[in-house]
Image (cartoon, rainbow, N blue to C red; front, side, top):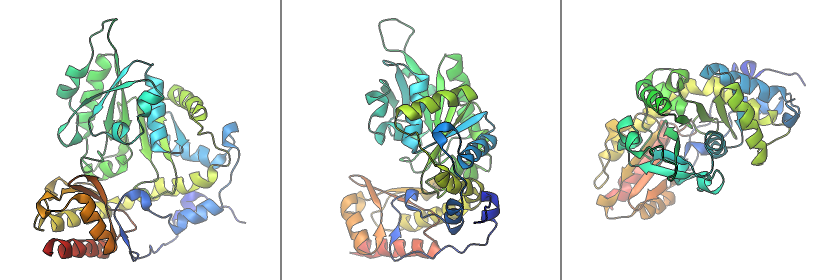
Length: 363
């Protein structure tokens, strides 16, 4: 079989399927691999990655490091594992980690920072999920031997549960500068950092330049079927590889997955603006419905979170009614629903979701 590089494969013209019978807005993790990703996976040159011999994953790691202007990168099975590895490297048992109260590492990663890394979260409710130094500084413990010590600050860009809000480069750099002056490390949970970069019109390198480590996902808006990346210094990645193996993340012919990741990394950021446009259209339509509360002007990436209390129905009840009409959405609280746009839902699908919501609200 003729071998092709991921770049060559992505040159092929592709027609994405139109929105399926079910409009799935639960998450951008539900995306299916593109035809180019499937071809790249089928034709990937592979080797044993535990022996560092898989050429495709090696290329993916090199390319991720280039894009973020860092020394090295590491492919990991999931974003949660990537975040845990970073916390484990930058802390010791008994340390505290400062993060937003709605942060993914706190809410959706099985308390791994405590259960495995042995750290305590030190949280604050940040407006729109965006931490500032004014919020962080009071949480830093004094350098006293008889209290837990602060070791790490974790930022999330974009912020999932705050509705895809973004940190500007200036906000992140100020936090990093002040944290480093205080002897703290900064890890960036950049699961959707490419969405942030597109929304702000800058590069992911500019958004993460002073962070000590970065994790980003290939399997969300970028559309790869599996995997995330850790990015940082060469020394950090050498330690990360050890912890990846310790946590059961050492894989063998992983180039089959990395090939799809390469296509996602090179091609998918070019069309994320479409997801953002669809999210804004969705938010504007939802805001016009009776009983739905959200500010569409705050929707800048691909996540729409809205309040349903005014409808007289809980989020779970509304989600069930939507499902009966062929639209899937996640209830994230008693009266909050999250919808996430992605490349498997086009504008027609967004209109169908809005029509379903109109029917429900009219009732």
